[in-house]
Image 1 (spheres, rainbow, N blue to C red):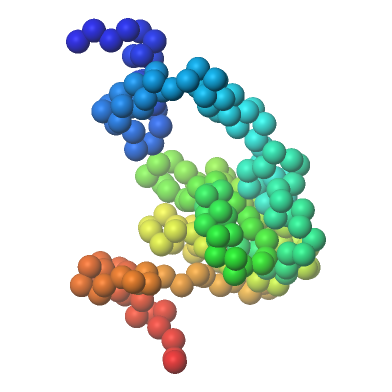
Image 2 (image 1 turned 45 degrees about the vertical axis):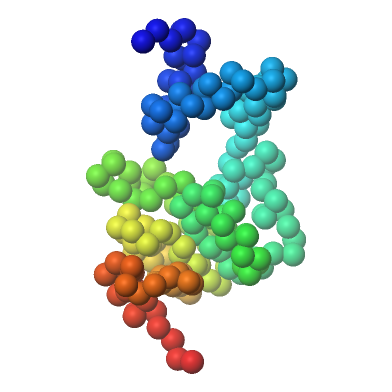
Length: 198
């Protein structure tokens, strides 16, 4: 099948994105071709601006377009609590709850020997530097409830113990609205471990 080179390159570009297979990449490419030229230019500019203008917050390593992200710059945040997350998307998820009012620290990954990711590839040294400030009283480990996330949480717990800071782990278990019959064994085990008195 003949596909003009510009379309072929566009399809290849979309296929580099996670979760985008050949059919979806082709569909997106032809969708872009059908868009107004000014909309395509805006999309292209947005991609370039995001890549060029975003950097890591000098305090928490979250992505930002300033030296400090909006959370770290907010003087109303509780500076005695830091929630450690794996990814900038986790900060967005936590902020949507409107329940957490402390600071964050973004690791940009999790320890994964299978993928060659060790503690040195994460922003752990920056976290330790932040803990030297006696303001921090609690560290909440909010890494993902999978093997890599658990390994990262255990590593951080051991590393932080000498600081004398309270270390907590977010609860894991059944999602609200979930059915027991569809939950896997690990989720049910975590739900039982995290049960509380009513």
